Length: 459
Image 1: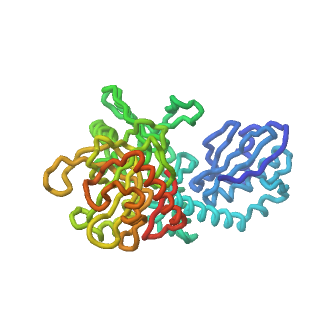
Image 2: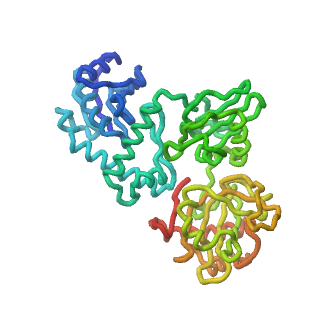
Image 3: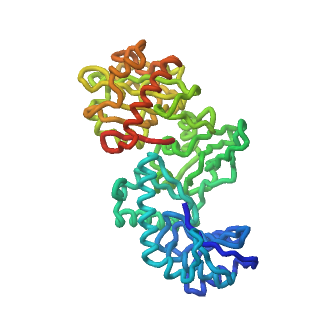
């Protein structure tokens, strides 16, 4: 989201004159895009997203993005004033009201209102989507999500001005601290072979050639992370959200919700080890977005029932309740008996079984990895395959399951809901019946979002 002021004119403006006019005002600006159709610049050591001056069919516009820094908002009227002087045209706001004094119109009250709106909007988006919000910074993207908000003490329901301001100050610091750092940004894009109208997916690239890594200090956000080993003619492509799962040592540190910096010497062997792990998260179709349980049936997804009996499981009931937020926001795995039938993106329902009244669905979501073998959770040294889970709903079993065992038996009477192996695939008919019943249950929780019921509304 953004806000702009437009200038209708046939005059042609030289970019250098725009920058000079703003500098004459006493502002120390850094320019990151110096040619039309879009100029981009910001105040030295203070800009987060900067200001854009764009060429349009009617003339020009000055644009500022939502969730900018105070310095960005304060530079906005300066840029408007400069363009007004250069074009000789009257600035007009988005509501088609002429601006006679930009410093008065976009003064302290307006800045406060913009900061207040940004704070509430960012928290609402993070709360409702359960995913990161990625924004363009002056030099590289920055990512806001539940984890980074919590780290800075920003409450999702009632975010304070102080805590959110400290977070924005941190993002400003990151932009300028790494403004000249080498990043993994590339010009590589992947086009959908089945639908050329889809937007190509950008790739954040880590490569090996002649036994050397490409130079980078920051792993910057894009649609995908690409590991390319040209020496071995091997490529692995994963969605960016899964990059953190490939890190096997302490050679990276997180700088925001999902971007990382290299904090120790990284070598070829490290990256090859990361590539081996990344293979677990490489989807068969990079453009396919699996739907969550409760969002309508998708024939491309198989549906699996995972069983959890706290009496025998390595996960206790207290452990489940205490770890709900971590499970919802991070990643973890579960054993899948029919793993040979399962694929990344398939749906799962985790059903609590055993003693007690609160039995039924305590979690739903999609598989976030391919099946992989690991140590037997029971300690019996069996051959066990696991899959990572990406939940869309997690429910505290001590309070109330989202869907009881009795409701499950009513929806799908020909399945054994009270015992059995964890990770059995339902038939297509069973999966459709369960989806219909679960959709109704989930719709009743549409507006719930608290420590006892965590719901993600989109991928």
